[in-house]
Amino acid sequence: MTVSNLKPRIVTLGTAGGPRWWTPAEENNRTGIATAVVVGDSFYLVDCGHGVGRRLSQAGLKLANLRGIFLTHLHSDHTVDLASLAIFGLYDLLDRRNDPVRIIGPGNRGMLPYTSPRATVEPVPVAPHCPTPGTREMFEQLMYAHATDLNDRIIDSLRPSPFELFEASDIEIPQDIGYHPNENPTPAMDPFVIFEDDLVKVSAILVEHPPVAPAFGFRFDTAEGSVTFSGDTTYTQNMVTLAQDTDLLLHEAIDFDFVEALYADKKDEGSRAARDHHYKSHTSVRDAAKVASEAGAQQLALHHLVPGMAGDSVWQQAAEHFHGTFHVPADLEHIELRPSR
Image (cartoon, rainbow, N blue to C red; front, side):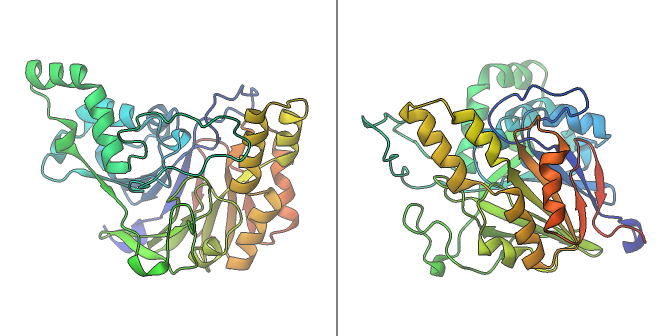
């Protein structure tokens, strides 16, 4: 394959954020957050939101051409279909026994986050023996939960184990940056390389999405352009650093008017804590445009949209604050990193 035939692009497999099924308007059917970075015949997957397997099929992307899965953070709306992709995809990846697909994402947090100050009683965590599994542990536990199905297929149908076809690993955070999951989850830092092959170099940086830690933004550099993903984050200077002069920035956005309307008549502490979370952990439309402008991005696309059923007019406000090429893509749209001129 020659460089001139790579034509790197992204395919928006899913553009909605949040751990819920949004009631779709007929013209705005957004599924869970997932994006394919396509380079030549190969592709890389960023996040595995609800519906990712079906969307891959609809996009005409063959699992046999999948080179890696990258998880920005371990909230369920970014990981919920990782298990289905690994289990249903066994039949498409039989030739990967000696070259497993990499699954790369955050490691074990190491400690629980601080309890919300709105709590009236101390919450009881799930799985206190392992309350904050990282990517490697999460993938192992997901496969163990499906052992009945998998062992039937391994023993009766002589299929390979998913552990032969996928290799999950945790991102190692640089030691000297002062990171601490509760006290300093987003120190100022330089991007660092987490993966490289003959088509892409993938770099990561810590972003601000409390109480999640670590949470990452990713940048893919190819011979013919770059694309940068914010993951879930509030406005952070680290994203400006990571996205410097990128050809395409995909940034999350939330409609805070929706948040206010959602919680306007709710006075319970759980609802108030959820409202607090949105403000400290997500990015307004205006601030997403600010990141793109400060980074000198050539193109900005908003995704991980909350609410997932909002009309485009909500998101188009960003165009007032960003003067490059601006997109509000639907699911299954293609955006070239360097559009033909």
